[in-house]
Image 1 (cartoon, rainbow, N blue to C red):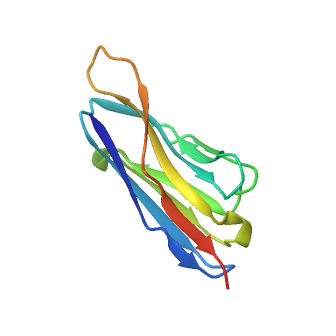
Image 2 (tube, rainbow, N blue to C red; image 1 turned 90 degrees about the vertical axis):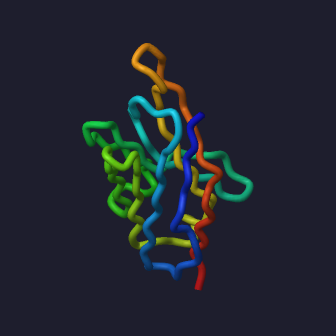
Length: 121
């Protein structure tokens, strides 16, 4: 079983910064892509950012240039540095990871429970 735990959410003023962290634990042989999605009230879940095990990154259009995703493979962790936050960034942020639990298994996607980010003055 694989468990993803997010931390770092909270309330921040517009223009401020916040960093989210997510650590994977459990039956892990290898982790492929890790990333963050978010879901705002009344809206569909959307990609925020993703990063491969070699550090290749992808960003959603709405966060490009403001957010930075990074990872620490030794710690099975992924981070999201969020800068120049806007009210429209308010959402629940979910961590995800593609995990193999053994050499011969396939990658399976796992999700965290989510962490709330609220941007408001």
